[in-house]
Amino acid sequence: MYGLVNQAIEDLVRSNHGDATWEVIKQRAEVETEAFLGMEEYPDDVTYRLVQAAAEVLNTPSEEFLRAFGEYWVLYTAKKGYGEMLTMAGKNLPEFLQNLDTLHTRVGVIMPNLRPPSFSCTEMSEHSLHLHYYTHREGLAPFVIGLVQGLGKMFGTEAEVHHIKGYHTGEDHDVFYISWK
Amino acid sequence: MSSTSHGNSAGFYGNLNLSSQHLRALFPFHIVFDAGMRIIHHGERLVRLCPTLKAGDLFSEHFQIHRPERIDNFESIFRQLGALYVVRLRSAPTELKGQMVLLQENLILFLCSPLVRRIAEVQALGLSLQDFPLHDPAGDLLFLLQAQHTTIEEAKALNRRLLAEVQKVASLNEVFKKYVPQEFLKLLEKESIVHVQLGDNVQKTMTVLFSDIRSFTTLSESMSPQETFKFINGYLQQMEPMIGKHGGFIDKYMGDAIMALFATAPDHAVKAALDMLHTLDNYNQGRQRAGYIPIRIGIGINTGSLMLGTIGGESRMDSTVISDDVNLASRIEDLTKMYGAPLLISEKTFFSLETPLTYSVRVVGRVRVKGKSELTTVFEVFDGDPPEVKEAKRTTLKLFEEAVDLYNRQEFREAHSLFLSCFNKNPHDQTAKIYLERCQEMISAGQQADWNGITKI
Image (cartoon, rainbow over the protein chains, first blue to last red):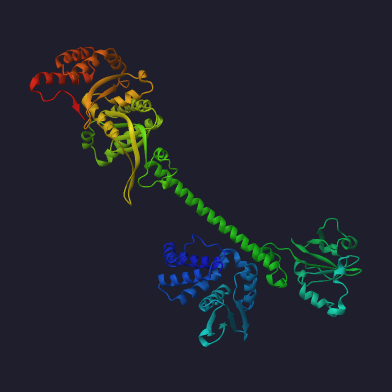
């Protein structure tokens, strides 16, 4: 993954739990990098180790940490200067979700080794849709849930996310039922 | 003509004539104009940038060709169809970038999109990323430029951190220099303290200077710990520069005592000692004005082959100097009390002086160094004395040295008589006074004395 993801984990931990906690997590994850570079490629393993270590140190299930991280991701990318990109990707939650795939494809175009996830929307109605999530990375569904919740906050829309299908139900990808008011 | 590349290959690919509907969808910013530079139709999104734009308007009402230069009519465009065009809008602070395509003999299509370098510019133009067709690389360019901008900001932040760390290390280094003298590292041929390892050592002929405050223990008894430290530091601050001034460096402080090393000729150590005594005079005047008693110091100097190196264990290391000659310097410093003279040097130092005649020196005695069979002569350098005392010592120099010689040969009565004569001529001669007393003692003790008058150190 690109360093931006690891930077976001670092920023989340530092701002919510302090610098000392981050140092403990980094050490536990056996990450020796002094500072992550946003546009630098890092093995996915680094991210997984950081998530695992953070969950252990913060005494929280890793799914919950991933969810919180997904929510923070929206805030963080905005903070790193990609905010205008986000606002241009849609005026409201459903529009944004429909552009989610284009957004990731664009990122993939400029970061050729990223292998970003793919998204599609089906069953669209006025107050709900099904978001399909395709990725070669495992265990990140809670991150997507947090991400959608974070987007809901960004648009001031109360959104509910349910993980209705996935590897756990024998599917080859995850499906989320998203509803909003 | 560049349009030939579109060629007549319709037969193979079928008829690919685009409808204006397709053109609008694919190129939302395009412009088609005729030979009279009148706009025939245009992309819908262009109206966002140019609200009054409509078919039938003259190209020049809304646009001005910026590049290539000197292009202002159909003919000139026709002649430069292969160029990259940048066209300025009159209604908005932006440019359209694209190419001219000859559709028919009297019809040109300007295939373009707004030139944007920052997302904020897109917003300022009332556009959104979604107004650009997906095939248009503008979105990717914006993404890339944003990524570049963010990367530069990151690099700047890292640079600030680096600078802060470098400053931290630099100030740490400054502190280290105070603990481990740079000269010490130089002698060990180490560039930095980082390279110093336990057991590093070097042997070198050097001059050692020891100084101590007389009766410091008595002095400090009347002071609180704070006062003691304030006093010692006040004193050392005066003395320290005198060592550096003459090319020496301080190996260590031991309470009020200073041990300094000189890698150059011993003359420098002697000059430093004389400067210390001179500085002490001024310091004492200040003390007396403030109502404090003056302090007295003793300085001993010896020259010899010293081993400099590092000693210690795993967690605590120190630089040190090992040599009998260091001990001797310290013992000679001790002798300053016995001889009542503030500055004494060993014979090794005296005989190594480059310009011995420039100093006022006299023999003050011979001592037996522990473990050595030969006696060592100790010299007094009295250039630090008040002028009249110094002059009197010079006048009585021969007499005095003869008396010392007699004393060493245990001819105490004869010695006594000469010392008395010295003392009468110069009642400030503390050494002569001390010798007089010792001669007296030796004479009284007579033959029973089991001591021959030679001091052991």
